[in-house]
Structure formats: C-alpha cells, structure tokens
Length: 267
Image 1 (cartoon, helix red, strand yellow):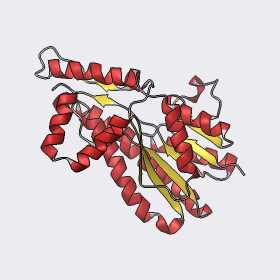
Image 2 (cartoon, helix red, strand yellow):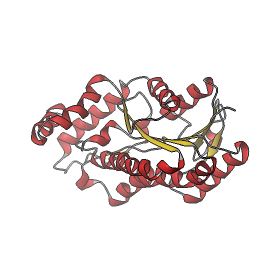
Image 3 (cartoon, one colour):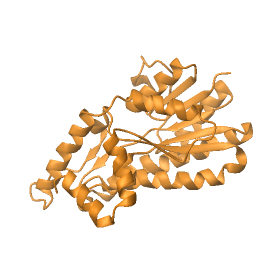
Image 4 (spheres, one colour):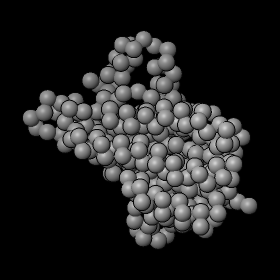
C-alpha cells in the first residue's frame, strides 16, 4: 500500500512542491488550507485546516483517517513570517505568530499521534528554518518560534521512542516562494528610531526570498528523509553559506558571531 502523507500548508510554496513531488513518487498525498476551495486545480486533495483552530485540526485528521485508515507521514509545513523591531511589534502579532509556527504544529502532532501509536509506526517532519538557529535582527520573533519548534522536536523524539514513531526537523534557508507576501510586516514608522536600519533589512529579506532556491530542493530532501529508516534529529537545506552560518555559530565566540550577523545585515 502507498504511504499516506498529510502536509499542512500544502496548497502553495514549499508545501505544494513537496506534495507534487511525493505524489509523483507514488505516495497518497493530502494537503491542507484554511480555504480549500481556493485551490480547485491542486494535483492532490486539499483538506480544510487552520492550525490555530483546534476543532479544524481534529476534523482534518478524522477526514484523512476515514478515507485512508492511516496517516504514515505528517509534514508540519504551515507557517507564517513576521518582521519588525521587537519593540514595535504588537503583542497580538507575536502571539499569533507563535500560534501558527509553534502551538499549531504541536496540536497537529497531538491529534495524529494516537493513530500512529495504534499502527505502531509513523514519521513526523517539522519544517522549521535556518533562521531558528540564531536570533536574527528584525526577525527575532520568527527565529524564536522556529527555534522553539526545533527544541521541542528533540524532546518529542525521546518521548516517542517506545512507539516506533520517528520525528525530525528539516530547516530550509531562503527559497523562492510567496512567503514574503504572507508575512506580518511591522510598518516602517517615520518617527521610529529603527526606521533606517529596519527599512534596509526589510528590503534585504525580500530580496533573499526573491532570489531563493528552487523549492524542489526541499521536496527532494523530504523524500530522502521519508526513505531513511532512522532519520537524524536535524536536517538543513539551503545554500552553502546558510548552512555554514549554523556551523560558525557553534564554533565562534558569541560576540564574534554577533558581529558577523551585524555586518551581514549592515547594522
């Protein structure tokens, strides 16, 4: 039987690319969106799901289980970007970002674990970010939410060992998607002490996404992880310098690494 894969946020961007790639490899793929009717041309079924609403999570999992009797692989891909000086981002937006990037994936995992435990098998792949390995200026909230998901995955893995359920993180760098359009951008305020530096950083972030890698690279990486019997704890997918940045943080003194980041962002 084909493996059944559920991809949150599978209607566009990286999630869509992963879904189409896996379907071509013979997997039975389901994606999710808050409004499935907006994607009538999707190459795989799109199920209603809003990761910030618990009732839709339960309904989505039950719908897929009712149709397929199992979920072999959960890919927590749904996420949201957020930029701005931390001082100027409204609390409501910070909380909303964590609801999407951190609490949402946790609740989807909780909903799917009972069925995976019953079938004595399963794989959960959490799509995090290379940004989650470091506190990036004007992306601090995003870094924090993705970093939190990285860490809780480490704990989850150990708790699930008795049930033959694997979990891993896959952290992408910059990919050419529409994530910038869906981000919450704190406005560049005329009277803000951060106006000049935040404005330049925001422009740089958008340029990085526009010139990012082909999302198919992520799809290929996810396929390899699914084919791996015992996945690693962490995977990174991106250009050499993005992956090197993680290594440098591990080996350089904190202040030296901080200066490298500040120079990179021209701060």
